[in-house]
Amino acid sequence: MVANPEQLHSAFSYCLDFAKHMLEDSASFLPFGAAVTSTGEVKAVAGWNGEEHPAPAELYQLLSAALRDEAKSKSISGSAVAVDVNIPIAYNPTLPDGIRVHLEGEGYSRYIYVPYTIKTSGLLRRKREVVLDEPFSVEVPADVFVAK
Image (cartoon, rainbow, N blue to C red; front, side, top):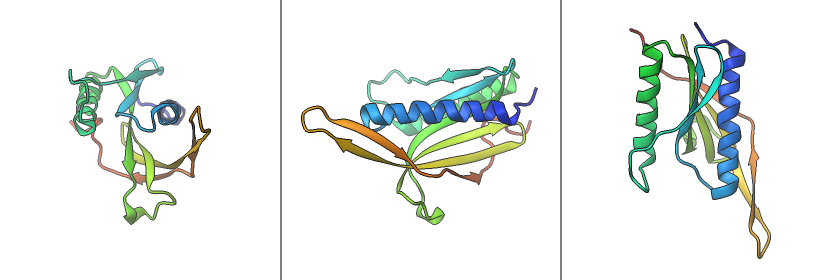
């Protein structure tokens, strides 16, 4: 089974919504993801290496490897892995900070960047508001749904 565009969009939306929530709550987040199951449902995916303060790059690699294994066994048909990044200046981003979601399915692999800024208000109770800018995508080599 191949994930259809609506299923991939659902995985992307899950990641974007959760990333925004985490940014409002903590001003940052560790890599996490979502997968489209073989039945077409979106499930949350997280990684843990046993450390209290894991390196984001290590978690990203753990997530990608776990999703790659699931793709090989045909238990998922799509994946999305979100990470908090500085958007490369080569892309001329409107804002330097971004949520990057690596969205993949069979024959489809894109980084979707969503630039953001965090506005803080309140003196005694600090409240964060995340303002998202227009997303843009970049075609990248597959990492999860690699050729057999």
